[in-house]
Structures are given as C-alpha cells and as structure tokens.
Length: 187
Image (tube, rainbow, N blue to C red; front, top):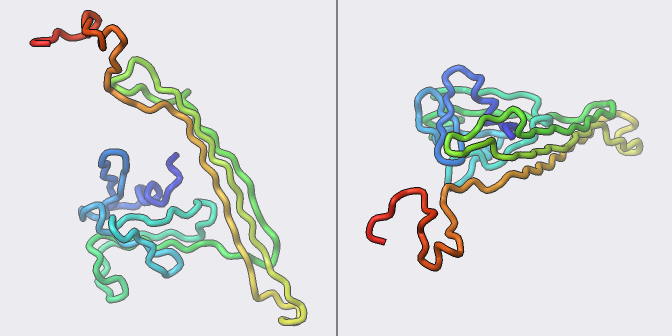
C-alpha cells in the first residue's frame, strides 16, 4: 500500500524507481536498482540473494532516514549505488504511543488499460506503537536508563487476481469455438 522505505526514497534527488514486473526497486544516481546498501541502526539488513531490502520497518518506528550516494569511505565498501541509513525510535522518560488505521479502496483508482472497469480493491492497514521507560528502582536508584519501543502493523488487502487469459467454457471443451472473440485458423 505504499508504506515502504523504498517509496520514501523517491523524494530524494537522484533516486529513480525502476519497475520490474510486480516490484519497484529504487536506483540511486543511475546505478542498477540492486546496488544499494540498507543499514538499520548501524547493521546491514540487506537481502542476501537479491541485494534488496530484507526487512521493511514500520513507518511509525522510523526516527531518521538518510540516503547517501557515491560514498567512497571504507565503512560502506562494496556499494555502487547508495547507502540508505535508517534509525529507529527509542523510548523516552514518558509513556507515548499511537494507534492508526489506513483504509484504501478502489474509489479513486484508475482503470487498467486491458480491463473494461476498475478492479475492486479493499485495503486496510492497522497498527500502533508504544514506548516508554523501564523502571528498576533497586538497580538504578530511580534513574531511567533503560527504555523500550515497540511497533505492530497488520496489512489486509482484498483484490481479485488479475488475469488476461480466457477460461474455456463447457461448449469450448466440447469443440464449439463459435463464441471465441477472434477467428481461429486450423482448429
């Protein structure tokens, strides 16, 4: 439903989304789309075989997001494209949280070129985050030094499988092809 770091990268200058089949992977400064490094809280979280995003963090848990392109420092060696640094939120001295629901439907969707009408779609994203201090009065003498932050998100999408193949009718299976839209040669 578009809530991804890769979609957030598109607002950065020099980043272009390359669509291949069902996915859209960003390309940084003209490099191939699978040549970037993803770093989450200082740890590489890149998929092993596909050189792509291995984990998509929840957008509400992101504190800082930065795209660095063409870095020649040794700490990010082996990267032709960009380095995408993501820092997640941490808890604070006060308890904070949020809950959200995002609904998407087909009311504003455009029609597929090959279909007569807009395909039905219903999408829901439900989630929330919470963060705060962990209090250990005997250990830390009442000083808050340990914090927690957690997030949860659930996606539910309902849409028909889009297929451009014709399913044969019972008459077609018996050899009657009179309802076929195009003329058939050498049946």
